Amino acid sequence: MKDLSPLKRLHQALGWYGTSEVCEEIHRGYSDLVGRHLGQVFTELRSTRPDVEAEIVAKLTGLSEESLTRLLLAPETTRLLMWPDPARDASAVAEFLIRSVQAEMAREGSVAQSVVEPLWTALGDTLILPGGQVIEGPSIKGAPPLDLDSPHALGIDVQGIRFTQPEGRAPLAGREREEALAKLSAAIEGIASVSSETSVFVARFTKALVLLRDDRERVFSSGSCAQYVGRSVLGNPQFSAVDHAFVAEGVVHESIHGFLYMHEMQESWVLDDSLYSMQPLVPSPWTGRRLPVRPFLQACFVWYGLFNFWSAAAGTGVFGTARALERRQAALCGFLKEPLTQLIKPYAEQVNGDLMDALGDLQEQVAANHEAVF
Image 1 (cartoon, rainbow, N blue to C red):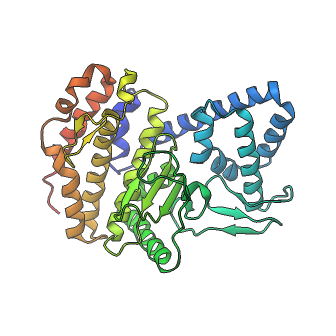
Image 2 (cartoon, one colour):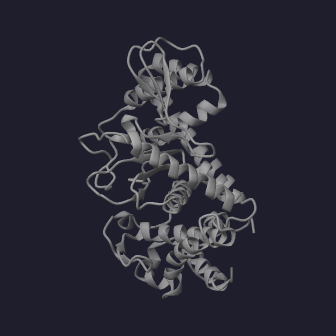
Image 3 (cartoon, rainbow, N blue to C red):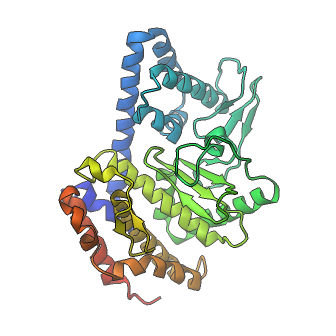
């Protein structure tokens, strides 16, 4: 089985049973990739600002392993390292790293330079005030780092039209904040009760979990994007119509995207750059909406993971059997229609062959298991 390519083994991680070696393999490969990109920044700085390069290396070396991992795999960091911007040079990345290292050092209580202006950790979960006061954001046992208040979070364009919106937004506050955090806490606890494997997966592939109030779209939403790998965004979890099952699904859903983005950074899913277009081409058998090719491919794996999660949940009653079966059916329906490979057939020659095989495997496995009785 280990001889199969990672693409043909992705489904192993999304069955939520036993330890999946492919998870460790993909996460380790992604971490190594981030390290190589950091090395490229150091190389550029060494030729232009060797003093700055030496300062950053010294500061990074002084961090604990936990803080170093938090900083280097934070979505804000990897966005800067791995998605070059012609308008941004290595000095801008260096400035971000210096500020973020200072924040991490203060968070862990290490000796650091005096803070003269507010600093946020790269994960957005801790604020350092001038004078050195450390203000930790909310946290939930078993949950990834939470970001409700940082400029990173408040500038996100939830609609996904652009990376950031020009005007900021107010953070969740008061009763709405309490409601959102209570639902998230119940969701995280419920995920762990259903499947320890899913719980570990969520913690590994969600680097920052953002909760936002979105006044432009008065509905609950979840989202993530390839440029900020591991950042999961939940919009309007405070609404009374949103239960902890919806929140749990959003958390699991976006963590699967994080997993898939990490893999795609290491192995191309499509062989033609034209398929990186966001033109909606493929009808989703789950929602009826047309999706761009790559998001459609990811959606197949996401719905497979959700089908297996809600199948397990229905057997435990954690979220209520009827509610779990309802969400299971939403995930199942797309697999019972025409072959997924048929939907993608017009683009098959431009898609990684292992991925095409994997889509067929997903559908076969769901077809073989969907009639299980709870």
